[in-house]
Amino acid sequence: MLTSFTAYSGPNGSSTSLGQGQVTVGIGGAQGQIDFQVVAVVDNQAPTRSGQIATITGPNQLTFKPYCPQAAPSSAASYYFDGSTLWLRADGGNGLVVDEQYSLMTN
Image 1 (cartoon, rainbow, N blue to C red):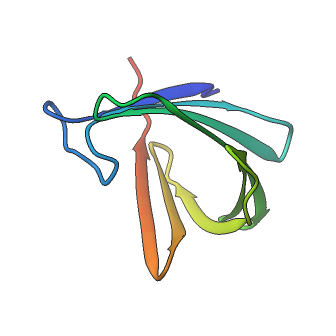
Image 2: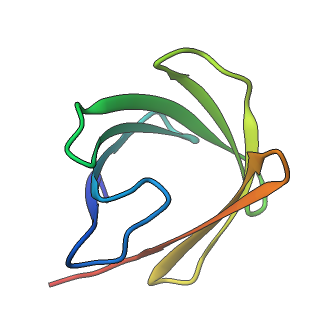
């Protein structure tokens, strides 16, 4: 079971829309829900923290409900897992679609 992961971007990897930095995600939660707690350090700035609960709402559908740094409206996302890669597609607001891909790596 995955309980956390860390993603890096910058000189030795591609920069993202977040800039160059490190994002650490802690994963927990009750059955049927996933609690994502994120700490991001971007471009050597002070760490920022966020948290949201993801709930499976249907086949290949998730709802994200932010609670930190403050509560915010829920947003929907679709997901697909092919055994080695998790694909997420979310509405980023203002017509922006956010696609994310997470590859499962084992030693």
